[in-house]
Length: 371
Ligand code: GTP
Ligand code: MG
Image (tube, rainbow, N blue to C red; front, side, top):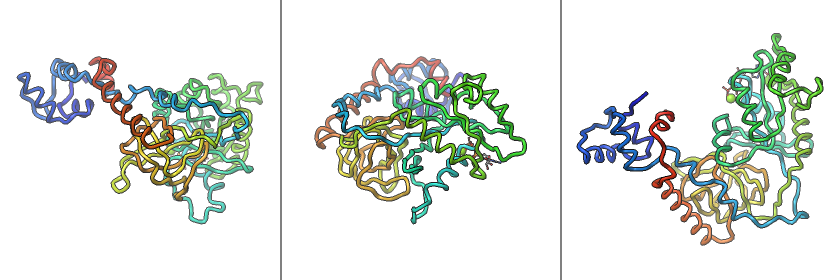
């Protein structure tokens, strides 16, 4: 499309429609909220604001890590759980697989049931914990990667044995390759009479994923998310790959990590799901998250229980931030609230300036591409 209504433009620029109407009025254009604007008017308004629709990627999200530069003592490093993301084509069984893994592992000993509160959860297999990220669909994965956040250690690529490699399968392969994350193939729906795992192997070989059985180094695990067949082998393979990765962290440090998702809750205010990637996060910690800050008021774990602390690779939901951060934002805990506040406020200020500044300007073409 080559035009936008006032309301649509306002939304893209994160402004009130009335403000746009006023600006237009000032330059002699009478417009209503639902009126279509021509290219010139849009350009005028954009120029006037110098504002981008992409302002959320303007603040280098890795910036915050510079506040986390103290080196860990090698002798303080301990093994941490691997963080696993499940990707694959629509309907190939990602959610069912996650449910199946969860059911076989999480319910044991969890008297309170498994009401899932947050988009990430942890299981235990062979005395080793594994963290699964439930949320990152491809889009979330891309956003996080674009923002410099690396949260995933291993990607499980789910391919339905009765359907084979599809467009989103290829997309997922490309994401995982670009992020340099090891891929384990779960050939799903093996219970179906029409399952054809050889075809999946053949097709994936064409994308450089050659099964071990054929002399390559890609792990293929035939599974059925429906019957639970192969789930144990899959978990075992995740364990093996994690071991090779030698994933370590130092629980004695102040915490740092990444926002998985966040929203504004009517009752609780800003609620953010964080993945602790290093150190230990505690209730009461002064924290800067992206361009927001606060003090960790309450923490809830993946089974909805209140917890006081969360170590490396643990997902937790926290409250206590002064604003809602974005998925992919980094967080760092500070020693005192004063420092957290001043750094948080200055980052918010920077974000605002960047929004108004030259950096944020996008061409009109880009603006249309966003639609
Ligand atoms: P999207 O979230 O839409 O991308 O789909 P998904 O990949 O999460 O697939 P989902 O788990 O929703 O499964 C899609 C359909 O496949 C559902 O009807 C499942 O019951 C079915 N399904 C998933 N795994 C299996 C399996 O192992 N065997 C069989 N027979 N059906 C399965
Ligand atoms: Mg799903």
